[in-house]
Image (cartoon, rainbow, N blue to C red; front, side, top):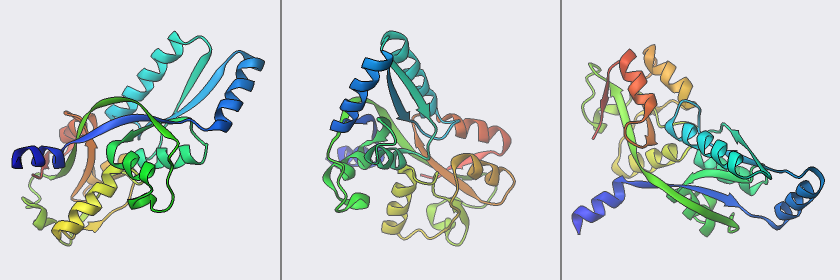
Length: 221
């Protein structure tokens, strides 16, 4: 049971979800009748991540095989932003993950009293993992060593940022958070302005592989 619970805590299922609002269906019907084309905006993740590539390729395949549908991929800050923008009808579809979608659907956590109960799951994609990385040679070997150090908790508005905040708060890890988009955080890491950064993704996550070639990384466990 302990091994099963540990796997549950360290794995995070990723989802692609859609908000199917009544007004959207009316709008889609009008678009189809007038232009013979349904236009769908899908929120992805920051560019340079594996999930952005996945979402873009999925949109291409769907558009090629659905003659009346055209899907436009939008770069976003991450899963939380996607769900919020779907709730505001700025996106029809969006890449999400289990924790964000659960809270939004139930109206709890970050979505307390602001439930988005009309979102629907289209399909499960994969299990992703939180990566907390620091520079090799920085002297940081454990999470406790991050105390007082400047660290990026993950891209602004993404699920990884929220998870990092909750985990660090629960376990008492106290770095100084450097808030930034993923690309900006990586640049700050490469030039030594921060000691590390984090992101959630499948193995291997491209941004960590690429960054490691410029400034070797150590993943904290």
